[in-house]
Image (cartoon, rainbow, N blue to C red; front, top):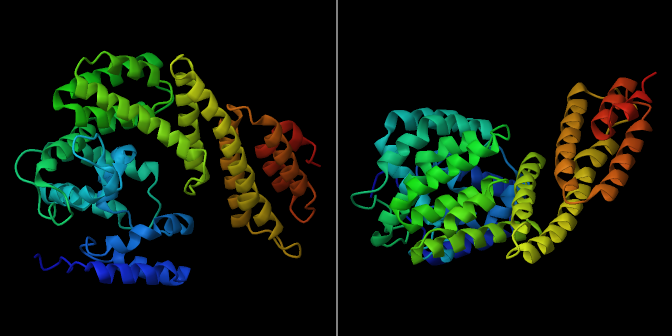
Length: 404
């Protein structure tokens, strides 16, 4: 055992500690989190945090962004909990991430050191950070995976040695094109260029087998709102039975991704909600054009409209109305508070724009007008600040009525 590797927690010990943490205060959870983040090797303690994943998403603590997180960011749509994985399925079990990341880290020491430096400051894993790290990491990482023996820690993670080749090949296939996928996600990329590029990538990945090819198709369906029809048409031409099954799994994963958003999804920042909703609305619109998928897509559009409107209303209350009510009426409003309110208002409008594509306008109009009325009634806030907030929410004409 490496001198830096922690002794694994035994089953009974792990269960007892999980039970204790389940009832712990937020402060206690944060203390445990800081201890785990400070370990040189987290493999012995990561199991403690698994049951707290939803709670940590709600607390949203600033944390160092781990090398493994930045490395595997392009594979998010295919990462699943271990019980959902089986050999031959185009997904990546979560317990494979640490040994694969350790393998890449050891093979690329200079790049790994720079990526570690980027993520060392506690922060949210923003698109800018992921992109900056990925630009220097993903392509080289792809060349280090696959071939040879499974890395140290593979068997300890509960993974069969025979599964290494296909999982490593799947990661390598995605990481090899991950930076190009990152560039193609820019909405300014013409549809023709996007479809041709994605089609070429799928064609090239076909030689890697159904697992890598299916992983790539799954990611594409969930990351490019205007491409699903073209991607599925391309996938349907595959005569190989295993490839067809991989395509069917990729489509079902896309359906499940949208269906999860119609329930009670894990809380996300407003900016991330808007991006996810834009992609989901685009996917359903494309699928609804096909008679085979129209009924299911139409039903999901209605469910997603209801769920997204409810989240918009709740978000409006949480990030704008409640903070506004909490501002003292006896002292000047700090600039930082106004800046925060403006940031929240802009994020709400971006989410509002995506919700309206589903037909949520009446409810949203009423909620935005209510928030604007609350702002207008605050005589203790300088007129220009009130006008700026109202302009973000309702437009320039509404704001002009507030300017003296």
